[in-house]
Length: 243
Image (tube, rainbow, N blue to C red):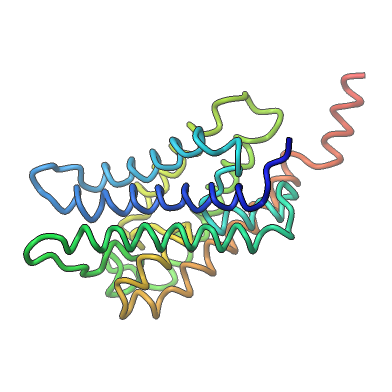
């Protein structure tokens, strides 16, 4: 029985809430508390764990995109209907904004608590290590490209079944280990928008990059994966070999 678009969109909103709440929450709460010491590595793992856990929880419902770039890449690769992209994007942005709102309440819920940069993404003076716009764009493009490539490969019908969430979650962990110093890691326009709107200032002015670079990286992966690893020609070749 098919699942309605409304239910699938609801699952996307819930899953994206968990991604932003768990990933950004680990940076804003646990990593900011020196005694706990989860630091850079812990935040990277937290983002990966949010995707891994939600992939098992709602992957069979919505596909567990949790990211406008993922949805677009799947459309380009002909794994998802283009007519449903607006509903998924809206759900992802709403889920991310609700999570950011909850985090804002929690972060400011102690004496002297302020939002500050609110785990937002940025380049130049807003980059954790001072990287410029070109470096930020390139790292976001490359990491999103490979994130989509991992997703397309891990969810291919020819891939071992049941292991996709592990590969995807570890892929996102690795991406954060690479790119947190450069941009604080986006690869997800909904995650970037949610934090930027609360942080304000430069985070909002630089938001264009954290939409454009991930979307372009996703499109590139959506085009290249079928050419290298799948598509009608590959399926015909396999059918001929098997029969």
